[in-house]
Length: 153
Image 1 (cartoon, rainbow, N blue to C red):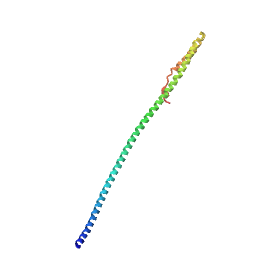
Image 2: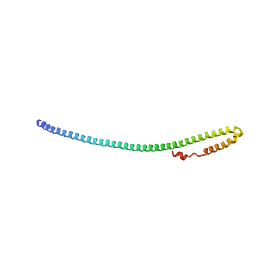
Image 3: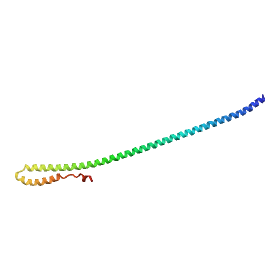
């Protein structure tokens, strides 16, 4: 029995060592699996980061394109605004000119009405003066407004 127990303990000791080796191999195998899993996880993480970077770059390109379109539209709108402002300035100058002419014509009509209600002796003298005033006023009134001259400013 002693020998069988010694053999048994010797083989048990060898079996124990074998069990430690198996355990060590199992731990090494688990380490390799973990290492492979970690590498795969890191690879997926790098791929996600790269995809996120690519998405951000695409978004940047899209936003830059949109920004350029907005700037172009804004420049066109600004140019249209400036053209309309120039046209409005011309129209305002024409309105002022026409108002001035209207005032002049109203004064002439008032002058003629005042002279027509006067005596016959003064009608001849005033008709000569009226003819001079009327000719000057009509010449002034029929001068065309030159929009080309105004547009240069």
